Image (tube, rainbow, N blue to C red):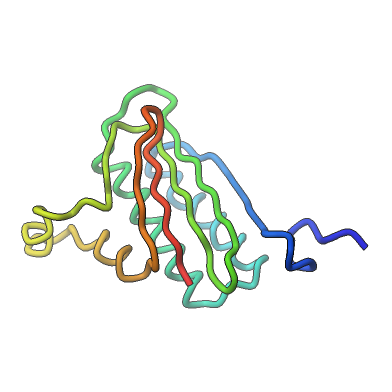
Length: 145
């Protein structure tokens, strides 16, 4: 028997889904709807799915608010990979280099402002959080369980 396309019928097949989105506020809902749909198909627990959606929303918000536009076709490439009961998120964007994991030196100022708590939430919900820039894409990877 062939494994189901979502990889759930065969534990040796790791489900992975990737989708590209634009970089404008209207795409926030499309991203959230897609992530919720993927998590539902994969039967991810409510807590892990909530954390995944919240973290993705914060990363996208950072792109909108802090990422410097470099070209007309800036975009986000979002990959979700099932890992046990959780999800690995790879969030890539083409905006100017911005390391959302580096809040050192800004953390005191950010926690005193109205905003600035988003990356603290991402850190709280992520088991692992990493960033690198390859000259074209900002890559932020996080693991949520």
